[in-house]
Image 1 (cartoon, rainbow, N blue to C red):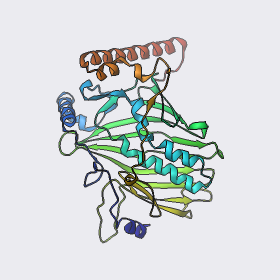
Image 2: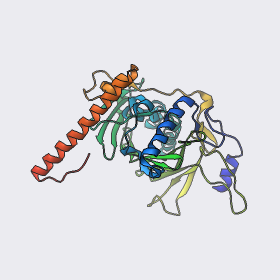
Image 3: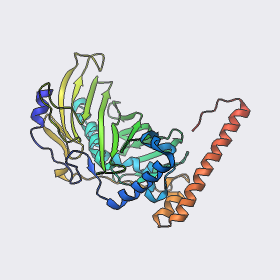
Length: 365
């Protein structure tokens, strides 16, 4: 693996113009960054040094001025922008290794489309979102918990050729001059062709330069993909260590490296065999055995979320705070945000009291 990776890294991978020299997405919206830093310093004055020592962001109310006018339920679909391409190809692929390559490409290539400057609105418990992509892929999301924040989703391909579903708990906390985030939970894709299934998880995300310095968004860690039916597992390391005992080679942190393995009984068994090598950058290309499956040089189209017709009344697009922020009415948006959050807290009290009177164990949501 080491020698393959050094050979693969002998070329500089193509990366988006927003790529920082050191790796990751360099935020260039100075006005938005300045506004957010003002909020961070205000919070440090209010909460103190504890803010930068791992305080959870999910428990802090942030001003509406640093938000973008959409809900997290809408934003979560940003990372699925290549589903109409790579998941549809995976759905008609009979070779399980090629199918795995398509799913890896879908997941890794979508990471760069999740790099946004402003924070979306936190969903309200029971909030839903119905949307679709241009090819007819349907998207359904629902917020099922507030503490901790948990989102469920399912994405159904045209003709039900694939079914992508999962549940994610969003965690975010301050770490000195950075924010560490992670969507914990499974991502499962089932295919109608043969009943195959691939399960994977997302890496950590770091927003660096929160209070000073360059604002850079980076992904880091290991992404594992598993096809239990065909006994195939893949490991994709973001920001891999390169070097040996005698030297270290520093590469951009958005570079990736890994393998697709075939195993006999245990995905972690030492006798598993590598059937494909993975390299590239989540900022520009994904390669398997030096063959490009995705590259920004091809101007591969990204699909944007479209609103579904006649959604449920609980749909994100009907939120009064979001609608007012879109229209530029900041005071009204802030008032509505406070009303919705108060309503959510009051409903939680009602559920808790009902459970108490009925002798039911109360589970906060």
